[in-house]
Structures are given as C-alpha cells and as structure tokens.
Length: 86
Image 1 (cartoon, rainbow, N blue to C red):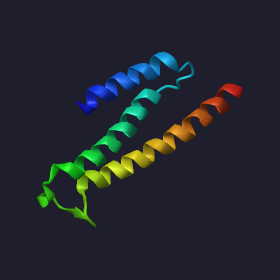
Image 2 (image 1 turned 90 degrees about the horizontal axis):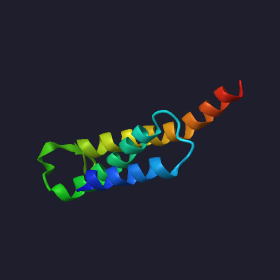
Image 3 (image 1 turned 60 degrees about the vertical axis):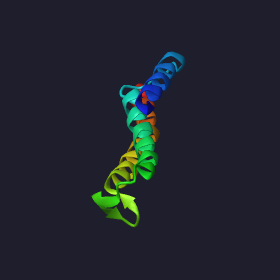
C-alpha cells in the first residue's frame, strides 16, 4: 500500500514540477522509501533479526540511504546549474 501511494505522489511530482534534473524522481523514490521502511519496521515486531540500540538492520540501512538521498537532492541541482552556466 505504501509503495502504491508513493507511486502516485511521484507521478504528481513529475507532472507538476518543471525543472526536474536527471535522476531526481529516482532519488525521491529512494528517500521516501527509506523513510517509509524506517517507520514500518517499528510495527513489524520481529526483533529476532538483530540490530543496534533498538534499531533493526533495515532501519539502519534506511537511515544511511535517506541521508545520502537528501544529500544528493541538495548537491545535484547546484551541480546542474553550475554545468549549465559554463
């Protein structure tokens, strides 16, 4: 259900936003998916899989992926503008 909702949000983003840099929708998907996965993992209830400080392995990976995606969403538009000005 979460992925279907995310799909429709991304379709809306593509249709409404005019200046989309190459790969932006994919990065938004990964960022939103990692956030959703982080939240969903709290409700799964299978702590047998292990983790660190109460977070599961999937949550730790989601935090890393989300952080990288946010960094890319900040860095890549600036890089694209710099390349277009040359």
